[in-house]
Length: 145
Image 1 (cartoon, helix red, strand yellow):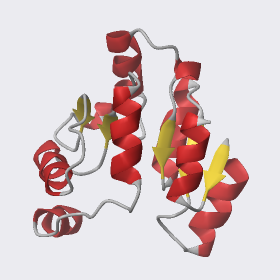
Image 2 (image 1 turned 30 degrees about the horizontal axis):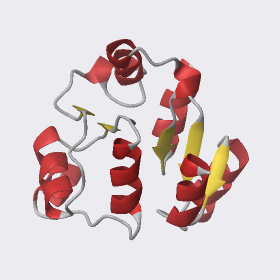
Image 3 (image 1 turned 90 degrees about the vertical axis):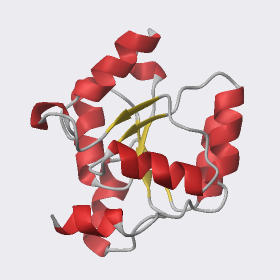
Image 4 (image 1 turned 180 degrees about the vertical axis):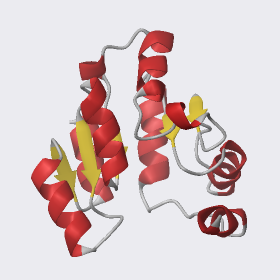
């Protein structure tokens, strides 16, 4: 309830550079899917407010519990819908539930270290992510170079 109240009254701001990454990714044929503990309508509102490309698929808190992060349901659905193998996907997340979800389906995981500077989170992500970046520009280099 605390999280729901927070996101209903707070529009998330995209990190500088994310809009350009997402636009280029989409232009080059990539699919953008969001798996979140926020509701679909909050995600759409935030993407629109930031001028971001609308996600191709959204799996939010409105999904049944067994389909929410960290369960791999959304990754399985994305894989089947777009005929993409797990190793051809990439999951970018800043917290352990995203890592757990990616691991359970064999999807390479990028730890988004620009999101938190909490030592326990940072240390876990650095040690366990396939790739760990502290700057959005590092994600851009990884995706496009």
